[in-house]
Image (cartoon, rainbow, N blue to C red; front, side):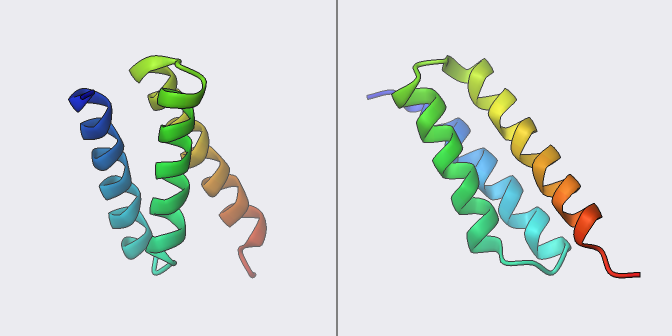
Length: 73
């Protein structure tokens, strides 16, 4: 059983859940996207923990850009 990947998936999901709560957004969507990206990078693409963390950084950047473009004046 791969315990390290599961631990990293849970840690990233908790991070995005807390970030969504801080931003008053849907934490289920943010944490769900984090879990999907983590599972894809670990188990489908087999990129390992570095690929997972890069995927999470990409998600964070994508959310930041989306929120910046969506922000109302």
